[in-house]
Image: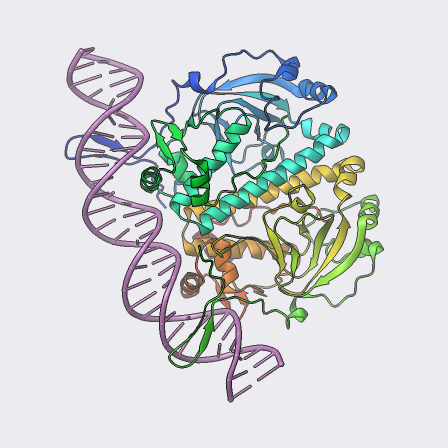
Length: 282
Length: 282
DNA sequence: CGACCTGTTGAGGCTCATCAATAGGCGTGG
DNA sequence: CCACGCCTATTGATGAGCCTCAACAGGTCG
């Protein structure tokens, strides 16, 4: 079987085309990176993320433990892979700044985006188990991550049961979101899927203090959206035109604007106003 | 907006039709129920499921703990709900005999089947967390379940760290399967989805000793399959006809036959032969 | 036997994919 | 500086895949 990875062709006017996507976020650090430098393990106490409503508060003792498991702070360029398919890893990451993508590649060369990872999300837990994960992680923007010793889970379970409990709850929450995505793909149309995704991103960003107004910069291309909601790039464009013409959402020049979240929520079946669950920040 | 729940109509020949599905498994207990009676909490030591390769072995101490958390053994009729959407529950179930369905209802009256639950699967963990789950559980056949005190999780995390570890691994495994389903719906066609689903069911049943030969009885209707893989009932029929005509899989009179698993696996991208992960049986 | 349900098949239509063309951004090298 | 390579976004045309409606055969149960 031949796997087509990239097709190049020239149009009548002489323009050269190529189907292979690229990650073009090398120049966007200023939008997705905080300007503060990382202060080392002890800085968990003053971590800018921890005061955000997305994360449950921690005691000083808990912070000491987490700080102790923190090995270093790393930066990745946009497009750089963090974890490859099936890879086994002895470390976990906490995404600190920037966006990442969790995805799977298929034998026919197509990609399914499984999730958009935002600051505070835990990366690489499945990769610490034998067999690893069939999913890969790639940086969508320039990112920085906190590197945690993979033993953190075992130590948590042993010495910090309240943490382990919270982690299980986080996993259950993730599964709820996965169920939602499946339901969207299985039982709703194109514009509903996209609308739901945008609202979910909006709420997740809001809880992290990253969506102050009614507009926000999204480091997301049409193909990322398409691979996430199970559509083609072209059809994503069309569905977004529908949303724009109905004044529900506009994503132009990478700036997302949602004029009226209520309307978009009604259109896409998003449960707006439901209290959002907090998650554990490791 | 009018939500249509059921449509009845009469054809030219006088036949009356109705779009509302039913659960018609009341007479099938003999196929999905073991004949042995439940022996009470102490019987975890002699549980017929535990010796199956799907589940990791337990020490006598672990079994004592689990047995102590076991409150009773319950039976549900086919079609009976175990957990309703959003419901909060103080108990967990371990499915012991029979099949169950995890699903979500949408506002437009359609259903998305999230998973088929088989003997040994844990039911209701998300329902123990505040807010519950948006998914519902219903018995697909007559079933029996072991009822566990909801405090089992907290106690596990506190007193049995190796169990808590295993539970986290189970959750990660579930997420892998969820990722797979999402990828199937987003990026593959009808017959691939169905083929994959059937092979996955086959392997899960095999590891539980419930698929001895190359044929097995599946308590699954077209509409269950359809709601699971994101297709209409009618199109499931057509896709299964294709599979039958290509001699890949046959599901007639509720008996599934896979003449050659290799061929079906090649057709649907199923990773046959990959060692299957064991899970924890509570 | 009739009420009710499931499964199958055909006809027609809608949604979405694919192919193709074009405009335009961004970086690079002449 | 402009030309060019390379990429993304948008739009039109066409077709494939899947849905919906309809009809009917056959099963099960009272």
